[in-house]
Length: 203
Image (cartoon, rainbow, N blue to C red):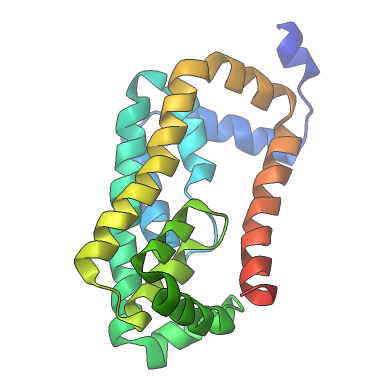
């Protein structure tokens, strides 16, 4: 047992983390990440980073491919979110944003779109839930082609950017995660919660 392994905290979180790492190289992991990336863009609460990062740690050689795969499915899910906002907002769309406490954020997004135009889609780079961006873009009538292009840019910068970081600094990242796993998960959770709080109380 190495010094790093001896220093690892035990418990449920550690067991889940080790299980994900053991199963992050097979084809099922790629399917699971595609589903999470797709669903997060329209209705799922958790970001695909929770699986993307372990997969990057498990196979750094495919870091850029993994980032591109995650980006593709996230944007595809974003198209579903756009369709919900454009065609089904009065039913499914309003119900979804209400469940997450984001109903007020949709109208704020529409007003921001009037003021800032399509650049408002760049919020996809922030902790603000991307499902709000996708559903609101459809609701506001943002040009679909422009929405898709900006989505590929914002999602690509995030996920392919993560791939680049782990490709070049994977050993350091794994050591930090092994040593500070609880802190890393706490930071991720805080970012997710911050996004929802920002929508509810700032927008």
